[in-house]
Length: 240
Image (tube, rainbow, N blue to C red; front, top):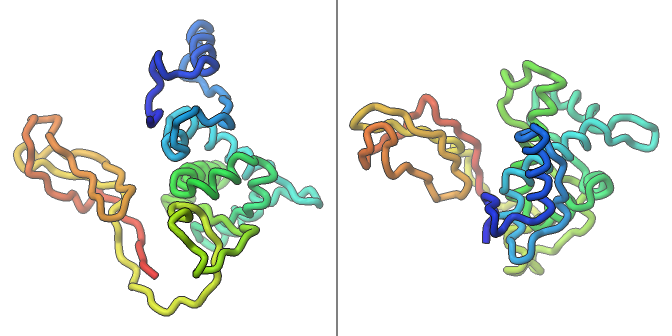
């Protein structure tokens, strides 16, 4: 079952004790480090990553990784990468799988097994680090995308099976056909046709599944709702 909210029946004892400790000390809402290495039994990894407490811990650890990871010469690898990215006005930050696995082994597992869920969190964390180092960079790009490189295993295209669905793979080949780059909905806002209230934003995570409101919180009507094009955020989309 998805752990989108922790309740008294499902909350793990360690997390519950920490929460009670923080409430008793007046630290409720403060950043608390949690153990994300232990996946609760019966919980899908994707659902575990999407819980608020886990997302916060992942973002904290990844930000620390970007700021502190050094090579053999003592150079801060990803501070240099970020500087070069910003100097070129780009928004793709290449992160070595080997570096990530060395610094945070659990991230190496998660990136391979649930890339869709974990990369979204890493993207957010990377953007926060970038804006800390370059406060005005959001005026150039509102998002930074983490690109995992140096995956140690190369899979052959003919060896890919159903078990590889939703996993991170490294393949080699020649692209013989691709579509143009199309806009895809990312964060969508809607206008209620009856009262004019603007609803959202609604995050569009799955291709072809548009998240639409069912009722208007302002007038309690069932719509109809029209897309607010001015306030909707798009992203690029391409098929190969």
